[in-house]
Structure formats: structure tokens, C-alpha cells
Image (cartoon, rainbow, N blue to C red; front, side, top):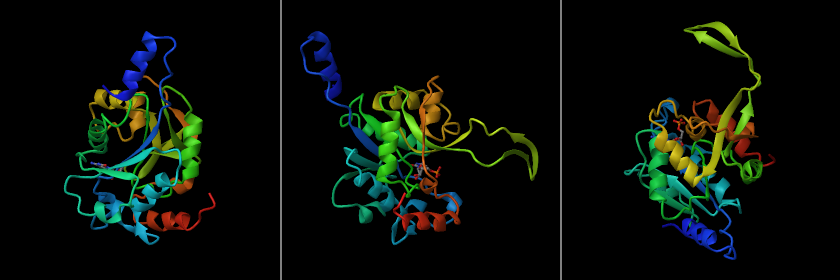
Length: 249
Ligand code: C5P
């Protein structure tokens, strides 16, 4: 039994018992992808960006946040790169990456069963978003507060959105109420585990919030920042480097 469960059982038995410990915040970074769209000749999370591997920038954001109790990074079992970029402390590597992002997160949650309480929060963040800052982490945590459905950083859509048939616009999608999901996305360990266990089609679960929404819940949207872009295509590298050179946001 984990410590949180034990604490709540005791509290229910005795009205004078101490309250449950305050929930903690853990970072979980899936970094077991191969980055096919980047065509970089290696996993994109290790590409050099502004003098450091992309993943190291991502880790630095969490290491710089006093709100984060510990950071976990998920890589594939045979990843040869991760050890060289680890900071001296504060990060634990889980070598249990799966075939899809969803599998990597699921495997990591299982591996953390004894370290993380059911009511603790897990902030899942893509390795390929190196522009995250401690300020954005704090904004997310404050914006979500104690919302049972958790929440995520996201940006309102500003462009006009087209639906395409191959090569041509066939319609315009009203952008009112449309947001682009970013990460981190934060949920209680209990909810995230339940949502990912219920998800059957990994192609539909491109982020963690979609698995939670499939349970009928509505995660809170907290406005993120363009600097938290996901480095996906070769052209994104220069934009990411521009933001990394600028710590004013
Ligand atoms: O490919 P994409 O950019 O959508 O991947 C998002 C994140 O999920 C990346 O950090 C990537 O390393 C991670 N991922 C993973 N396991 C996979 C596929 C992707 O951890 N099998």
C-alpha cells in the first residue's frame, strides 16, 4: 500500500487523525520517440540546441522549479545517449519506453507505483518542448489548482483553420473555442493511470488530456506560451534556439 492510501485510511477511522500529506508534483518526461519527422539521423530529443542536447533544456526547466519534487524521464531500454546528459541529481531514468507515447507514459506510471501517491500530481511533458520555463510550470500548477480533472498548458488558435482535401481547402473551421494543446499536462496519479488504462486506441491518444476527456472529464486549459513549441520539423530548431537565448518570458 502506498503512503497516501495509508494516510487516508487512518484519517477516515479517526476524526482527530492528521490530515493527508500535501500532494506533491512530479515531472514525467516521455523521451522514447525516434523523431521521424525531424529526419535528424537520431532521436530528436538529443539534437544539439543552443549548445546543449534538447532534452537537457527540458530537464533544466523542471530542475529550476522549486515546486517539482522529482523528475523522471522515460527512454527506450537500449537508449545509448541519456546517461551523458544527466545532471548530477534530481532526475531518475526509467528505461521502459514503449511503442507509442501512450505506452511509454503507461509503463512509467507502472514503474512509479511505489514512489508516487494516488493523490500526487504527475506533470507529463514532451521532451521535444525545450522552451518550457519554471514560470510556465508555476502558472500551470496555480491555474489547475485542485481541479479534479487536472489540466494542461494550451494556446488559443489565432489563425483561420482550413479543412483540406488533398491539396485544397474545402472548408473553414470556426476557430472560436479551439486551443492547441501543449504540455505539461497534469493529473493526479490516480486519474492518469485510470484514463490511460481505459484508452484502447493509441492513435487517438496523442496527448494525456485526450485520454482523460474520453472519461467524460474536462481538464482545465491554462494559457501557455509560444516559446513552449514542440520541435517537430527541421525549421523549428531555429525558433526554439531563439527562445532559448531569451530568458525574459
Ligand atoms: O513524436 P512526438 O513529437 O509526438 O512525441 C512526443 C513525445 O513523446 C516525445 O518527447 C517523444 O520522445 C515521446 N515518445 C515516447 N515514446 C514513443 C513515442 C514518443 O516517449 N514511443
